Length: 273
Image (tube, rainbow, N blue to C red; front, side, top):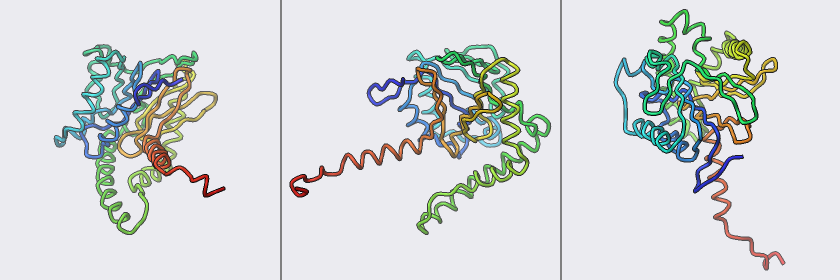
């Protein structure tokens, strides 16, 4: 069971992926708040933490991104274990697989044994993306289009707010439409589940496609951590081995609603009587 100490929720394991530090789309402020709210015995960075593709085309590294890195390093100094599983955007770190820097272990993948004895293959997942593997130019083209979509999305939602409309993600809608059209997500999930089965695991924990999920595929548990560009999601393992996908904006909204309820004046019982 999670342990709350001075406002921080302690969990056994915390899985984060697709932060894309070094891009304008990274929700670094929300991520930093999340890292203040949650602490873990073991941290897994499941790929695309730093976006080397974008940094090569143009340097962007504001203080907020540096604050996230410093917060992660501070957790390691305080005793958390940290395993970094590189993805395709931070593939430069794959040259250092098997090494440890300042308490951070770089690994191609990892079998994580949960508190309930279940074993999960932890892997970014780009190895099972046929576009990334066989048409890298197309993957880079798609990444550029996604960046443009995020930019357009910002302007579009400013207009929607002026019109009194709720937030709507153009980039998420377009991405989901395209990937559904080619059955990309379903195929990706099946490939990952098959690989977990091949390695004798009970499930898989991955990232890469920016689509958080918790489902069963032919008897195996498929868990995707999502991303910190749009959805702002993470996966936690509680001390009883229970796995949970957290959507941080939903947590914040619930917290704000609770604070508003607590601030309301107590009902006047005499008036009722």
